[in-house]
Image (cartoon, rainbow, N blue to C red; front, side, top):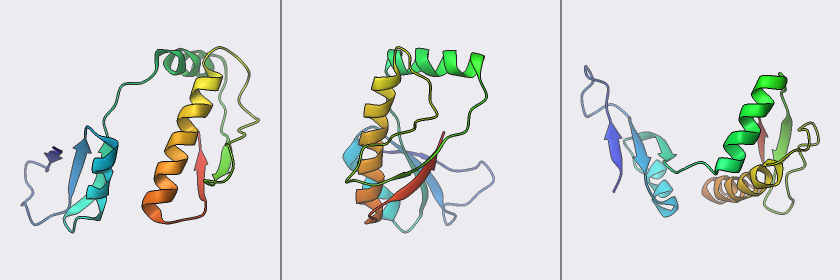
Amino acid sequence: MAETRIAPDATTALPTWHRVPQLADLVEIFDAGVQVCSWQREIDPAIATYLSRLHQTAELQVTETLSPATEPRLDGLPDGPGRASLMEDLSLLREVVCELLGRAAVRDWC
């Protein structure tokens, strides 16, 4: 079941933001009154550590076109513990976004 967020001064006729606990619930983005639908999930500790280290050591911007047929490369990201986990997670998210949008590819950056 989704958690609906509406601005305090908004009416229910305005678009809403749904935070969903299950991956399958992301289809709520297609509901008429939903503007944003986010999948609330726990971050892998290895990914959190990798991104924290990366944030402390560098200002990077990496752009990648993600498609369901290919793994993300993100060659600009340095090696280190947690990088492989991040790549696996991005692969999952790539598949989800491409499937939801019915697209062959999406452009992503981090």
